[in-house]
Each structure stands twice: as C-alpha cells, then as structure tokens.
View 1 (tube, rainbow, N blue to C red):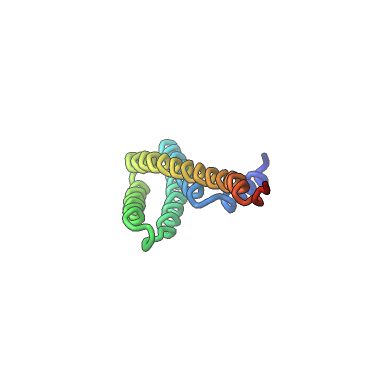
View 2: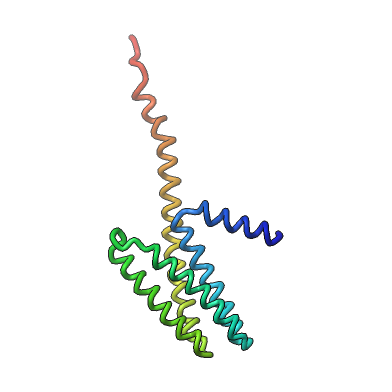
Length: 151
C-alpha cells in the first residue's frame, strides 16, 4: 500500500472508531514510538530518540486533556496521575542515555492497553447484544400484538 493510501486508511480508522478503540490506538502509537526511541538510543541517534519521545508526549498530553474529570471520578483522577508520571519519566529519559524509564512506561502502557481492550471488547459485545435484542424483541411482542382470534 502506498503512503497516501496508508495515511487515508489511518485517518478513516481514527475518525470512525469509538472512543475506547481510539484510546487503544493512541496507546499502540505511544508504545510504537517508545520502542523506536529505544532503538534510536541504542544506535546513538539522540535527535531521533528525542523526536520519538516527543511524539509519545504529544499522545500522553492528548489523553490527559481528553479526561472528563467531572464524570470520570476516581478513574479519571488516577489516569491523570499516571499520565503525569509517564510525562515526568519520559522527560527524564530524554536527557539520559538510560532506557529504564522508557521501558517502565512501555510496560505500564502494555498493562493498561490490555485493560482497555477488555473494556472495548465488552462494550462491543454489549452493543451486539442490544442490537440482537432489538431485533428479537419485536418478534416476541408480535404475537402479543396480533388481533384477537375470533371463535
């Protein structure tokens, strides 16, 4: 697939996906960029490492800003703290040659992405069940709505 086609596919995927799946996509992007940062660091390419960390920081910033603190309650508060922890860790990682901080953030992202994937799968299952019940329910109610039989 050419670069234009790939870009269009990615844009369509992001604009048509539900919120939970979008979070998973952002986490996947952050993990990808951090793995690239580790590779760049191993190759001694400090500008590339900084670039990949910056791209990850942009994702984390977007995730943090999208939190609904009023409705999200304790979960939103805890995610905000996690995102701040990641930001601090990655800012330190930019100025050191040690990949430990990056690897810590990757590990935490992998753990959280698993949780979001379960949430997304459960939400999709609930949507399918609701759609099925909407289709099945009229059939069940159809017998109750039939005209009374005459004897």
